[in-house]
Length: 127
Image (cartoon, rainbow, N blue to C red; front, side, top):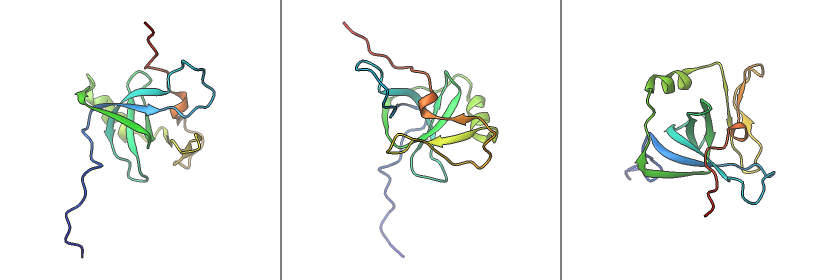
């Protein structure tokens, strides 16, 4: 048995604003490279972070995430997150290093939650 305390450097603030890297390679020079979401937890089945996109009401599991922990952005209706988190009516997709998502569900008739299907929230603002 190891007597060292567990590492906590990977722990993040729940409800903080995050930007998830969009690995879609079909982008123009000034297209957004990330999507804004809210960190809602850790997946049980894989490494990464669970991110909720309130505008599209989708949850994804991603590893390439930048956290803005200084600016928490809690949703107005927390029941909506609980419903989405416990829902078995969707398949959650993982973002991989190759840019193609891996499905962690077995029922292929359910709708997919894919990081590439999320609408762009963050946009380039020129001066």
